Length: 330
Image (cartoon, rainbow, N blue to C red; front, side, top):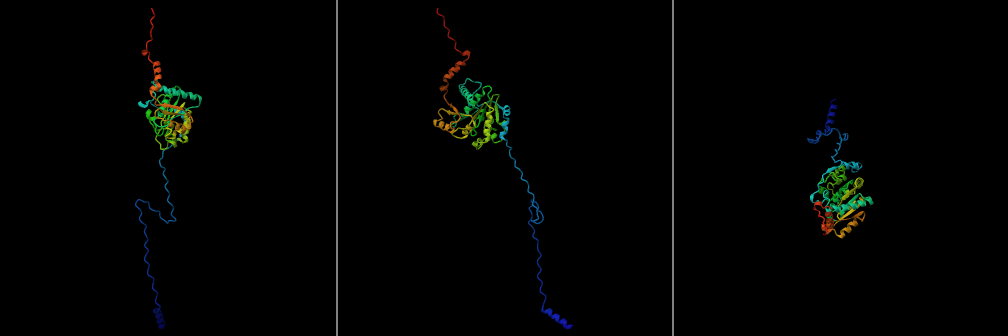
């Protein structure tokens, strides 16, 4: 037995036990970065099993409610009858015809123009009229306003004066009424016709101002709503008189002339050249041109004989010269 123990001991000394591998250092879990104080905590669980967070709905921004311009055309007659009244108070230096002073010679000239237009109306369907000029400062707005005032003096006539000169409107300043809302506001859907059509005092004259300024007047006139508006107004007024920009400085009047029944060209003596008139008529293609109105003439050149006749006819009886008395011969 002792030999066996000695042999085992020797074998152990010759084949020692292999060393054990060094112990691994314990794993330190990596902590996620701290969350910001104002952010919400992240949901727990793996990325693959995590359900997506619900997306918050987009809040609609506040926008202006637009009006359909064509919706008011069905109730146009009711709108005209209930139109808002504005006082008749044109500025003093506007040279607008005074209905209470019919003896003024310029008023008589506009009555003559009114008579000729009303006669043409019996021969052909004329209800919408564009008043324009070749160049600025020739009196187109002056003619349009005075013609409208003169036409409104006839009993049973309903007249509309519309300012389609969106570039340099003047009707609101001349009649001293609010310029907006006006036609541009209506065409853009920002105002209804009831806010745009005004009745001047207790007369038969109605006025539509131009409205707020727009960067694209010609594009606005090309809208379908513009043509539909002019056509509807034509059916409810005896005369619709449109003031428009000059022909040689903008294409607005050319476009409006295609929508209306006739066009009047205003020329100013000493200002308008023959070449300007020729080019203006060519731009209109001589279509629907009813005639021209001469402005700026001297009073003595046109009214000398008229004034003599008019003053004699309307002279008061107290100022009349006594009749000559012939004494009988002896």
